Length: 168
Image (cartoon, rainbow, N blue to C red):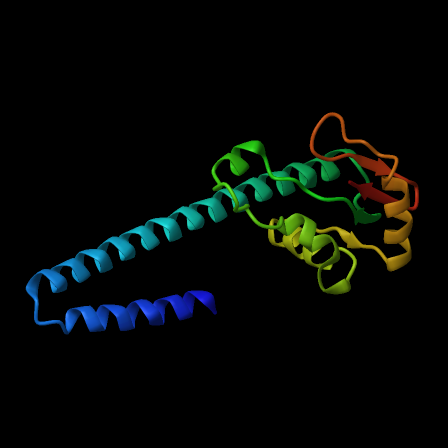
C-alpha cells in the first residue's frame, strides 16, 4: 500500500515537473526518474537473488535430511518434524541493516495452515521423498521430546522413538 502511494506521489510530481516550460526542470525530472527506476530495479534484483539463495539453501537442507532418513531410518514409520530452521550466516550477510531474509519455508511448513507437517511433507514429496504424516498427538509428543534434543553434528537431529521418527 505504501509503495503504491509513493508511486502515485512520484508520478504526480513528475507530471508537474515535466509540464514545466523550463527545459532544465524537464531534464532534471527525467534524470531523477531514471535514477529512481534504476535504483529500484537494482534493489528488486537484489531481493530476487536473496530469495533464490534462500530457496537453494533450504532445498539443500531438505535433500540432506531426506537422504539421511532414507539411508539410516525406517521411512515406513511416521516422520514428525519440529523446531525452527535458521538461515546460514552467509545468507544473513547479504541482507541490509534492517532487513531480513524472511521466514524459512522449512519452519513455515512444519505448522502451516494449522496442520502437522503437511506443507513440509508436500515439499519433500516434490523433491522425490515420500514420508508418512503424523497426527496432532504425535506432533505434540514429538515437540515435548524435541525440547531435550540438541543438534550437534549439523543443523538437525533425528531420533527414532519407536512409534515415529522425530526430526528437529
